[in-house]
Image (tube, rainbow over all chains, first blue to last red; front, side, top):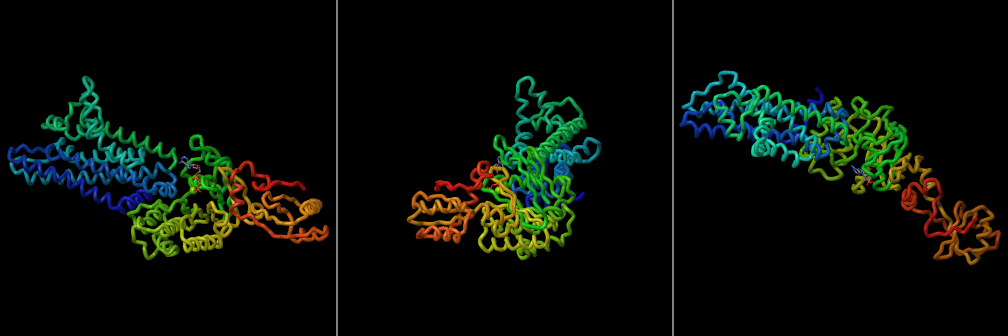
Length: 253
Length: 313
Ligand SMILES: Nc1ncnc2c1ncn2[C@@H]1O[C@H](COP(=O)(O)OP(=O)(O)OP(=O)(O)O)[C@@H](O)[C@H]1O
Ligand SMILES: [Mg+2]
């Protein structure tokens, strides 16, 4: 508990997390509003449609999670932290938990705001949050952001360097996971097992417009269900975090 | 009490700290002395559990650092004054530190007051001058009111006013009965603050003794004599068990292990005319450089000066 309180003080006594939160919500909701406004005439706005922009917020929140770690390495405060609390695993777990909860809550807020804004703007469509699929899509963004933040913290711990770690968490989901499908023959199969593809499937899988959503992301169809997808994504995030904690506990601060 | 036993740290092929054993006694200022790259900072990082020893152990109050409960209350340290987030205020920095070891927020204001930063407590630490950063670092070390304090080159880069303040501060801390362990690469600096010394060179222990002993050993005093009857005086002094060397350029005699008084008396007894009779003390820094220059070779032997030739007894 003490460690969580400390990480909270550390995180919020600098300005960048606040900026990240504002930008994450603003980008997500702003893009959803634009898209819904233009799509209103066709009357094709669905629940999935209101959530397509989650990626914008997610990227910003992942950058926030990375920076929460790498700035500590950059300014040497990680050494002071380990000096005051020598149990590095406990410190890093508290940090990951705090950042992940923040990311989850912000993503959740952005998701519901997006839905609400779409509902306001898309007067020609009949939008309603009914059914497990719809709820999973909107509320699920919180869970995806939570796990993505854990993953980002892990990358930050392993690389210790802002530029490198930010590049990895942006380039991987935005480019690498899309481009692997271009590999002849096996590309599409590999892509189905990419972590962010699995997370995406958790959000949009099983919905009437899921094929459309998948196409927008340049994705192929995946051979598992939505909940298996998030379990897979979670396993990768937590697994990488465990590796990062072991690494940090062994090496010099 | 800090105790190192066989402490060794390698970085690749380089041995930064080499089988180092020493202890820092409570209630006094102990200087940790060694030239640049001797391994002082590495040793201090190992004391704080930040770097892992390749072999050997170091204990704080009989415990490994990671076994300490709320370590800020046991040992406070300033290793690098720049380890602060530049956008965080001095107060915010100390507040999160205080919280880690369940220290009351009131303690933050106390230490800010003690180091004279109360007026700038809410300013971002990134804008602090070196002297102010150093004060903030000292406030960090004092936060848990620990019995042991450790400072790595605290006066580096400070102006004379800042240096005077830090020296006084360390003396006050020791006077309160605390253990102060402070590193420096300047013997003259340590001579003013430390009672005990741990001296290292190239990662190895050169000596652990009191500062007074070290200075007496390190700065051998010589009596310099010029005389037209050098041969006679040298023979007479050799009979009096003094070690005599001849300075090559001037032909003057350099006598070690004796007083000017004795040399004068020996000369008078032998009817030798003296043109010059003076005490020559090697500067502390020269002596220290010679001691640490080649840690192994000069560890136990006396101090040969390169420009002198030994002329026997
Ligand atoms: N992380 C590291 N990686 C590789 N070599 C290192 C590392 N840290 C220290 N060294 C090397 O170990 C030796 C001891 O360094 P250290 O910083 O402990 O010396 P120091 O006595 O503190 O010197 P100074 O007076 O310059 O601060 C140096 O040769 C240094 O180059
Ligand atoms: Mg150093």
